[in-house]
Image 1 (cartoon, rainbow, N blue to C red):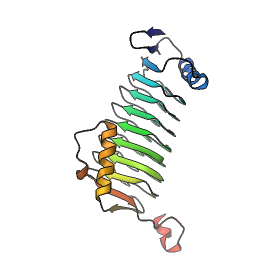
Image 2: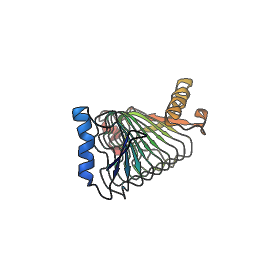
Image 3: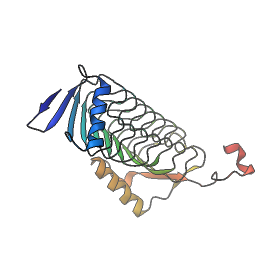
Image 4: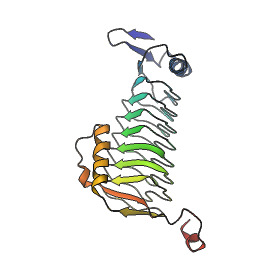
Length: 237
């Protein structure tokens, strides 16, 4: 590890530093309040669970691709991945910001309660599955079963959405600019009113995306027919 004094950034090379040691040091900042606020991680080489469980207002930049569960359970921290991310990116995030400059594999933002997740490439299947309050903005497209059982929060997709979008959705709001291959059970297209256009515009601005017009998006949400069991709907479950 070396200190970049000019930028007051702690640089950690995962080619020589064990991942467990890195995460422990990041956790210690949250626990004690002492330590660098800015971190740069080099040579991640697809490691799993990089920068997981952060609980402090840290800025963490990762130079390269990461494996499973990067930035999972994040609170308060801003994490930027300058590469691609594997399965479970920002899973169960509570707050803060996670930005991936490449693409993300399955289940990005799964079960996340808050914060902002931005994927500048594509996100694979089940993006936003069971989301519980997070905002997710994907510059590219998302795979099938995205927003499956999404409870609340907002998912903005600048590209296309795969089959079964929003299957068994609750009160999450979905916005898609491109084509939707198919809607899941109880998910319907809804009217795009002025307040929804403004909502998309605000989310795009927060994500730093300025080449998509909010007026081009369509809105999807719950038909609210599956909240409680009705024998007439048994075939839809």
